[in-house]
Image (cartoon, rainbow, N blue to C red):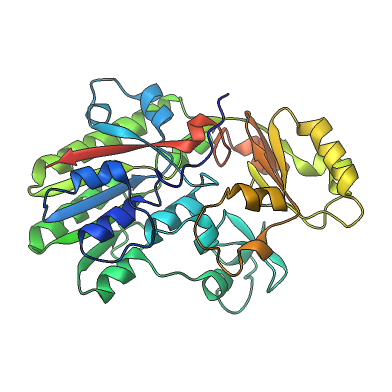
Length: 367
């Protein structure tokens, strides 16, 4: 499998910065050159639709060459590292790289409370227990969103997602909401919309399953129908990451590894953040390499920082303290979960460095 490292000059964190620059708002970082060329024209509505998990390889494996998405595929760009929903959508929502916002993955270690926390839900990893009587991620790694920047600048922006009012519970309702905003608000504006498929379907069924193909075809049809209704609009369809079918194992089945660890891994099952007991470093390196060296790259914390794997921007004050002693990154199809249930449940996954996971499309429709 081909390994692709993140390109922070040509990635999804650059996308919102191009849009902010277009609206006269100081961007949070570098812009996206490919999108900048489209933004040389003026549009009343600039709309970004992020379809979770719909990487370039997913388009190529599930859609015909002459379909709406592939004929409007302007180019491929990099996800951030890790290519996963928490890190990547936060970058699109903020214009920041993961090292800058420190929402590094599904589960993050917060030294302030000495816990691994599922950041979207503020619960302790693998449980329903609240991490604290306050929102730990927002207290220690809160960030200014693109929406906040628009409001501060007196410009109009909207976010459409199932977890925000009016809580659209289907992609059809997402598209209807976009159309309503464009029809009712005649001013220049930015609209960001998020939907959790095809990611949800692919996790459970595989990235080339019949179910995945059907879902992606419906998403394509709904976007095409939406674009036929819009005028004076630039519609950008992209993804946070791609997907790869995987073989899952459970880390607790490897006592020689568990004996070396302070706590269970955090971040992601394909980007394992590992805290190792003092004096066990050599043993851990030898055991991990023996067991998983064909499918994972093992990097020390110092190597991760020197590589600028999580970004080239100014590091968040919490960033380094959230990193463990090692980071194990998937470059094959093996995934190391914390539980047997997860290892058996997930068919298709992401967060590693394979080409299928790292490359996402920039689909551009000029309405």
